[in-house]
Image 1 (spheres, rainbow, N blue to C red):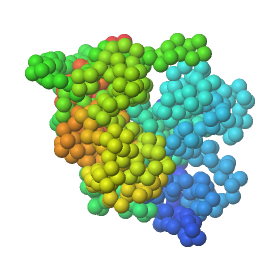
Image 2 (tube, rainbow, N blue to C red):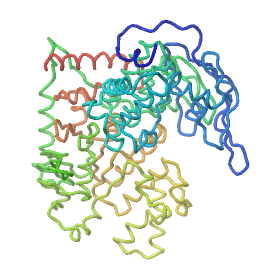
Image 3 (cartoon, rainbow, N blue to C red):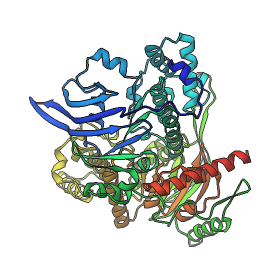
Length: 596
């Protein structure tokens, strides 16, 4: 059957059962030549994937999970080599000629890459790239391939698929680019789908939809999925079996339920302990919410109590560390297009010493607000007041002295640090510009800041590319805290980090916040992380603030349907709990659909 025939109807009937393993890997090794020496990246990797099975390979960066999977498709860099055996339905992949692998890639095995922006061709439209995947492996005509591409865009829930077929990758959001990558991978209904961190760039609601899509397609096609991830919530939600890798070697293999309830190896226990568990701080999520006659029953009085609690600070005359009142932010239109309003009538307050978590999906306006708070973009209406001063009315020259009072930690530390400056120069630059410190005093303060973020003082002479992602993020935090700000804006500071590194960075932020008492606007789509840090939460949806209150009130007694959907979509690292939450999410979505 051709891919176009197979894909035109998405029925729920499973494909005919296959016998034996789809993929058998035995003694797989991966090495790289560095300075005339072979360095091991993976060693003695062995596992099997059977029809209908979802196998997760988990581990931190550098564990070898991605490299061992790239070796299956012959996609290692030029200085890499693979040994051992990997058989796809009995056909050997390791050492196979490139013309054989080209026929297999995209047809029998397809891959969803971790970073869609680098995997997609920037000079071709997204639709053309999906169509190309169909044409390369089938006899479909260009018109049939285009229809299939539009169908696939609709399948992965890209809005207006006929129109977006003509869009280029840079015109898609990060989550939409990842969905386009999934559409390309699914174009020919492969028997094995290798998903390398397929939901890293996605919001929790989109992630839940993508995971449900992968689960449904896996059952319908009776195919197999090799899931490469560090997100234990995704593993708990989707995987049947788990392979745990550490430093290039497999340390544990077990069914998912067994791994989570009874991990045998210390490294596996360490990995699970590092994962923030949504509901662990407030004692559960979405408590006392029931679907009754197609509607949601909630506790409105809890929300009223939370609002009254916030009013206490105002009555005491506390000057807020940050206050937004009726803020609008517009991006000007281009090529005769109307301006786009990214933020609409948003108001919230952060008192000294408080941490407010700002949550929402991509495009909700979270990062836009973070940039407006730090004076990086202008507001079109409303006021942004920091420590009693409205910064929207200040010129760039008048704003400069106030910049000592606030700082920002960016999402991507590699992009926010100057590659030409050493770590010591990057951290010391704000102090040099604002405080005009002498060289001995500057060196002393840089050393103290490195110690505060638990980095060796010797790192002052290194450059950003010589540090790991977690170490670079610590440098970003040290730089942000160098002027002892009253307000810290943290824009997704842990989203690109492994769970164990993320846990250490979050612990560091908590410790520094307790010691220094600064207020913090913590922007994130990870509700478990927000719960860990924030005393209050504000929820954004399409530029509007739909709900705010204490962390407990928002997580246990949300009043807005969007907040409930957001919470129900967040995965937790517990297979039993995650299965229950999946049913709850389906009930909430069904109640919302019947209300519409």
